[in-house]
Image 1 (cartoon, rainbow, N blue to C red):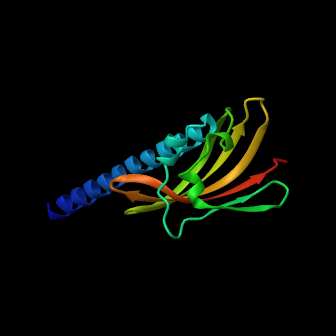
Image 2: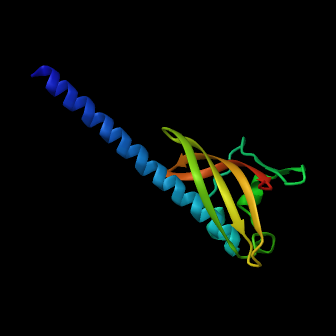
Length: 148
């Protein structure tokens, strides 16, 4: 009888932990989708709301021609709509993540389509922290590539 109770408790705790991880993963994906959409729509306030800049924040972009860009993190909070995306949409796939209490890292693939129909591809790594109960981006690395 004790082993049945022990098994039940272990199973219940495992299920509860998995459920909490799944809820947190869904919240993170929702934030990343919002960040992508607000960038493309030129919604500076909505985009800034996705970020919480820390002293260690960093944004690195590797372009398709081999150039590396080190973007000042403050640019994510003080965005000029004129320098943001100009329409179009993106589709993020292949999410992989590690969530540890109030921090997480996520990798995903992104296919961006401009309003003219031009497609670009990137692998992205996003760094997040839970600030006042909400997930916020604190850093990212984007690697643009040309598919074969």
